Image (cartoon, rainbow, N blue to C red; front, side, top):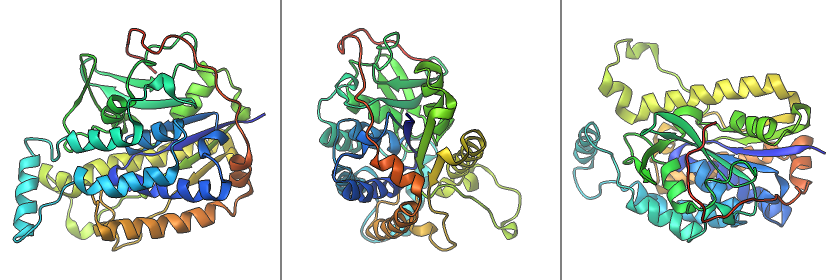
Length: 336
């Protein structure tokens, strides 16, 4: 029997792209989509979505959370002189985070309540970067009897830590350690999921299937006419550096897993056409942004559902996981 992994990439508000696809898939299935998968992994916004899915929260409810809370999380200056205000906001972001985390926390609390990782109904793995220890870590449900240290963590604090993108949000504090967004290390958590299955759950590689859903961040380029001498401001403006790092990681991950898994690895994403940049920003929680994201996501969903492999993954039912340990137990960090 195949071991199926659902992998959700990071991308800030662009995470709405993957949520929209999941909502369309759930509407087709008529049941929570996480029940089709043995493991759900997510980075950044994908981590928030993964946590919601782990509780069998409907994907369309997660979609509403993105739409309703996005403009509060990524608040934009209103009124007159907007261009000047945006320039001043960028200048401020050179010395402090662009946004505060309170609205992000409120959004995750509305979605996840007071649930802990040990309350999940499905296995979850979420990459983060511990800036106190200087190590990559993975927050996990207690699906391995030798690794139950995160069971007592509230999902809200895990979600905020997993989405604490540098320059956008302050570092998150969890039990005396400071964390930033796992996209620094794994913007597409696909290989992390395969590693979890192979190494910790002892699943043979030839039995692993992966459905990977992106956030339209899989491509990047610069016009030659813009020159070669980019300094800090030009790299940071418009999240150019962050987007390049994320896109490069996602491309490399997809290449590796296509080589390793063949047609058992399916990537669902949308390559941006020229001219869409204004609507597809990491923090672009606007009405036009939502419409563009929905248009791209609906097309990607329709194309994905033409694939026999995708339909077979969704139609399958995973065995309910067995969790271990006391969810209120002492917390310790987990290495990969």
